[in-house]
Amino acid sequence: MDNDLAGLDRLFAPGDATLRGDAAGLLVGHHQISSFRAGRGGAARRYIVDVHVRPIDENHAMVVAVTEFKAGGQGQQTQLWQRIDGEWQVTVAHVHQPAPAVDSRIWRIVGDPLVVRADGSENGPLAGESVAIKDIFEVRGFPVGAGNPARLAQASPAQVNAPAVQRLLDAGASLKGIARTDEFAYSIAGDNHHYGTPPNPRAPHRRSGGSTSGPASAVSLGQATVGLGSDTAGSVRVPASYQGLYGLRTTHGAVSVEGMMPLAPTFDTVGWLARDAETLARVGSVLLPPRQMSSQTQDQASGETTYVVAAALLDQAESNVAAAVLGAMPSRTRIDDEWRPPLDVWSAAFRTLQAFQAWQSHGDWIQGREEHLGADVRDRFAYARNVTSEEASRAAEVVSSARTEIRENLADRVLILPTTPTVAPLGHAEIQPVRQATLRLTCLASIAGAPALSIPLRTSEGLPCGLGLVASPGRDHDLLRLAQSADFSTAAVGATKGQSPAGSAR
Image (tube, rainbow, N blue to C red; front, side, top):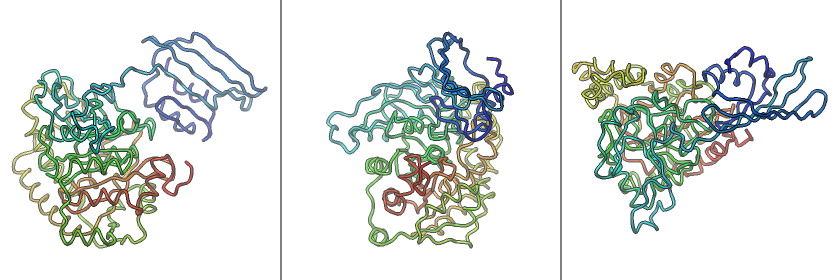
């Protein structure tokens, strides 16, 4: 209870075989366990009410302790102790705590379901699916909170459902609940100063990714089958990569953003997440406009897709992520060593224009209420407030030129790249360098107004990452088809079942 980190480290056996598990997942190795403790800020206050010791042999014993929490409820701690060099140390530990009725890090409000499907939709294409809605969409009878309690308190209940929400209900889906978002959707980390960080069950004690953080965790945990969100700078793709999910950012304007809180309208799109490619595609059949079969797309549908990976983009990723992407690419993928986009220039222009529009969208409310924002989002809006019209205009010119170049480079090809350059950072890690590195990759589809899809992979260490596909605007259905194709299904199935891309056991 004193959070004596050095003392706790001494009590746990050194080496890579020591285990500690709880409801969030399993930590393997003394280093991971120690890093987790260093970032959690201490354990919940509790009392030991009973202890049972069962010796196994002279050097091993099992200890089970019953605990009672100051906040209420009982838990258990089960530990395997071993005598090592004359001293007793824990080699395996499992901690059980009382489960909350609702995990408020994930859900703002939840029901079973919260909103039932539309009348007459029992045979619709999404019948039986449950949806977690990001807290920026209008749901009739509920206010939009945007991840901020002060804004929630002042918001009025929506009079109608956002069109995207209504189409899901009309297709037979039920609404499980309204899920958390990073404040004002202005983050890709998954953190929320007011409500906490939603858990990442595929990578315990690591960031969940945002800003569609609550829906992603709900889908990953099996509490919903579909997560509806937005993607401005990667807010669907990043949590998909961090949590081993499929995630689609749609072509700009392909799905109505009416009834969705804006952040930066030049880049805002609707997106969604699912645990499998087939569900992702069925949602696309409901939300996306029908596929327009031009002569070019007919040729693409009947022939092999042309894949290309730019070496300059692959170089942005850490080695473990780059290796996973390389290992999962179709054998006919062509490596392009010539296209070297000025990523630093483009991402800087993107951030400037995004910030300018974010202040246009929310500055009137935020001004004078900065103390109601978490520190990271407050700093972001402080920067946004000072972006001048002239700076935004220059950034828009860079973005326009970049959009033309990206679209010309895509043409009828599909670009492969790492969805994110890293795996999910640990909960206590500094996030700003990761954010900047991530935006250098995610901003490409955002600038181009292009559809982008993340397919789940795993690194050699067993951590989730994502293989990204980007295609020309309007080719959303093509990406959904490719996600289900033999080109990627083997690697993705291994990733979603907790295996490495090669299919070996984790």
